[in-house]
Length: 385
Image 1 (cartoon, one colour):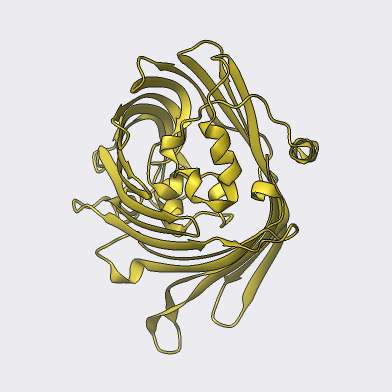
Image 2 (cartoon, helix red, strand yellow):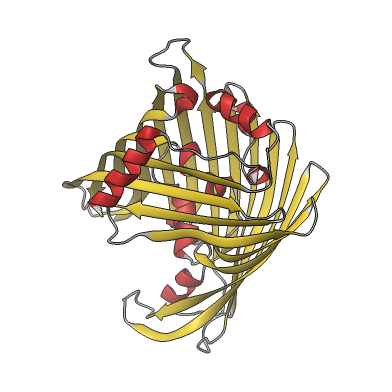
């Protein structure tokens, strides 16, 4: 696997690129508002020379990840590990209305390559298309942002919590997308995946294997430099025990305001928690999750030929895995700075620091108090190609 990571970095270094094609840029914020990608934006606006196009792109990162876990009130446990990660995406359009995409991820912490996406697409008209294959769900801003737009190496505690609930996997999916004018895009999808039920105590011993069906809906509104996204994922279980609910859902409402030198994100997530209900003994009462996230990014152009851009970023996230239990709140505070050195910021140095605060038992006072659960520092070099 180390050879794979080296190969990815070599491709990035030589900046391999094929003929440009019109990507599905509606799903991500318009790159023209980000100064660091001005030239790429202009390239996207250029008309395609022909319908048969092929594009190769990706990202590679290497660095160090330092995690400090608080095991008790007097002792810290520190873990320092190296980072090696790469993503490669290939897009091809063999004929006019057909497109194929494949994305492959490599992470040093894993023992094998992972398929991020593998699907085919057919466009019925300029405003409607169908996709079929392996892909992730269409959800909020945080889920849609790729590694090149994500300045924190790991996503927030909200995204992690929703993923642990089983809503955001890479599943076999049939998806329909439809544009209404230049402002609206609607997405509906049906996914199927295997689900492994675990015991109530959270142990790995499984009780049954079954199928899980997921519905996914999304509405995306874009007007100028404003993006508003409403999305939902609904899970349906094929075989469940009597004390299980047969459905669970998660929804999000996101907003992004983008200017040439500043981007502001706000996101609200709400849904039901099947995991917490199982831990609670499968009571008749439903348990709900709630997440609130706010992020600010600034793009400072230096005018230099070496250090071309400085990007400070700050984020705060609040997550309840049981909204009725006030002690279940976790708070995440993160900040960082990215230094861009190459043209279009294709070479970056990202440094981020964060902390998670949660309720913990205080043995001395026999009560729960808010204390730091984990510190994390990441320092990585990133190459975008």
